[in-house]
Each structure stands twice: as C-alpha cells, then as structure tokens.
Image (cartoon, rainbow, N blue to C red; front, side):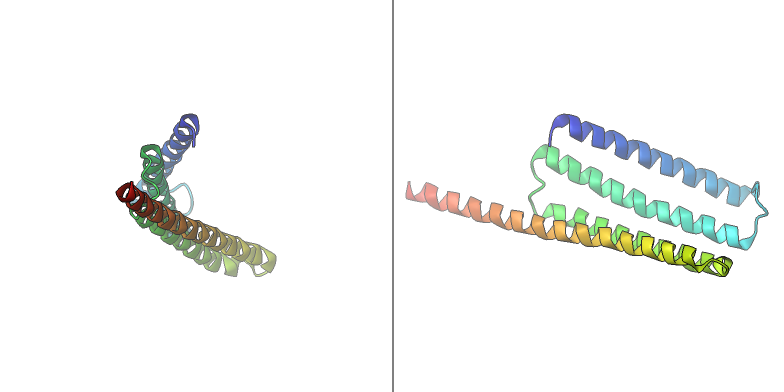
Length: 163
C-alpha cells in the first residue's frame, strides 16, 4: 500500500471519526438539555440513543482500522497482534447489524401500511452481516499469510544453519 493511500485513508478515518463524535455530542446535548426541536417523544429518544450506540460501533471499527493501517506502515501487519484488531472489527460490524435490526424492530409498527420498508431494512441488516462475513474471510486469509510468514522465517533460519 502506497504512502499516499495510507495518508488518504487516515484522513478519511479522522474526518469520519471526528464527525461521528460531534454528532454524538450534539445528540446527547439535545437529550440532556431538553432542547429537542421534535416533540421529545419516547420513540424519538430511543432512536437517538440507538443512533449514538450505532455510531460507537463505527468508531470502534475505525480505531481498529487505524491501528491496522499503522501496522501496515510499520510492516508488522502479518503478525498475531493484527488478529485482535480484526476480531474487534468483526465484533463491531456484528454489533452494528444488531443495532440496525433494533431500529428495524422499533420502526416496524409505524410501517404497517407499507411492510416493504421493514423488509428493505431487514435486508440492509443482512447486508451488514455480510460485511462481517467478508471481514471474517479476510481474517482467514491473514491467518494463512501469518502462517506462511512464520514458515518462511523457520525455513530461512534452517537454511542459514546449513550454510
């Protein structure tokens, strides 16, 4: 991965992370201060709290991706330490899907006239779980690469002893 790509990725991660934190702070301030421009109903309050929780899952994933990008830059990504971050990303994506399914369940009674919206939202939740599966497959590829790296290191050490 080139240096430019790493810098652009870090810039995108930083902007999105800062934006989600700002939105969370503003939403929490509206909930705490009572300056809610809406009617302040329990339905909207629960959706706002779930939204804040959903943004936490995104933030956790982005921080782990940041750590993985740092490992790429240092050349240490093909190590057992990377698995911890990948596992956390998978967990965050699954948590985001569960948060989405919660939003879908809360929204479903309001969609009694048009159940297609609920079905589409459920499909989006399944797509989020699909992303978790893709990252799981990538984790398996990382495991193979780490195993090959360990094997290559051992073979190199044996060859050095022979020479």
